[in-house]
Image 1 (cartoon, rainbow, N blue to C red):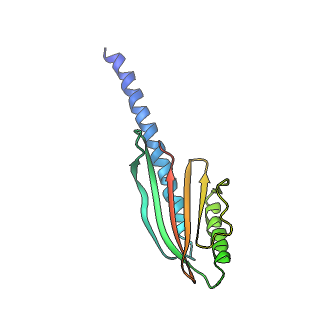
Image 2: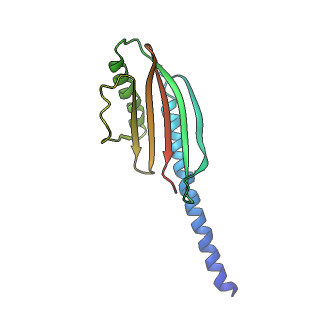
Image 3: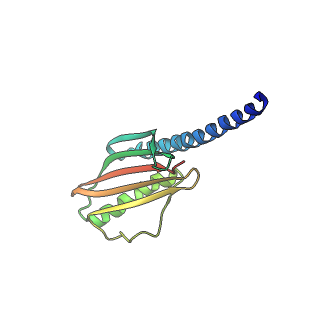
Length: 152
């Protein structure tokens, strides 16, 4: 009887280790990438509000990790469209350096002058970041960064 139970117990331990490792590994990558983007010297008052260290329930028995941060960028360009274009390019470059690609297929925001939202995707591990840019003042771009792992 004990001989039969031991292999089953070993399999259960391995399955638990694999599922725990994947969320831990993707969560660590999410945190690393988020911190890398937020370490950019051009940010004004960057603040990481959720460092991706805790599991968040997805509602179906799986979990994900979440990273959130806020910061601002200074701008001396009075043209709102140009200001958002420049912010989108430079923030996108930070994500590109971390191995992300800009998701395509959403609504065209190229001429929106009140706010823009951009989604960045990494395939392996599956991580997405969305950053939202607004213009609370003529010389300031407010940015909210939200990232998450896939549910696992």
